Length: 158
Image (tube, rainbow, N blue to C red):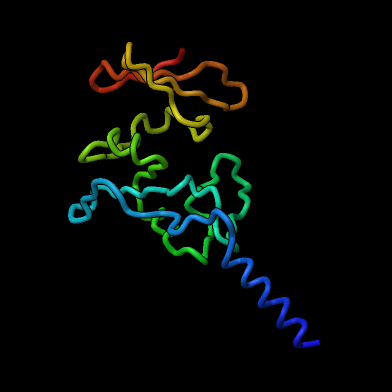
């Protein structure tokens, strides 16, 4: 009986090790980084982390606006932990790194005026130099617009 369990366990271990499509490493440091001044760090997520090695786990959240990708536990690929200390995640280095530039920074703007109910990423319209932000807050219909032509940038409803 114990030999049968050992054979099954060994077979499963071989299957886990030979998973098709697993990306290794899932995450790498890339792009500009200025750790001396603690300014920013950039992590490249290889192949969108589409196939993670078994066993990975991300707990559900009771807070429906907060599902941090970086909180996923991936014990068989420790590179994933790099996301917890990175300021920027890049999923496509060819397109993302040139957009970040040589000295990327992240600055919180508009304090309490924007809730956590922002839906997905903003849409940038180069012709008018504005960001359009979708908000899914219950009972709130307008979209938000960030006017990048003003200094400081202005937030308004659309």
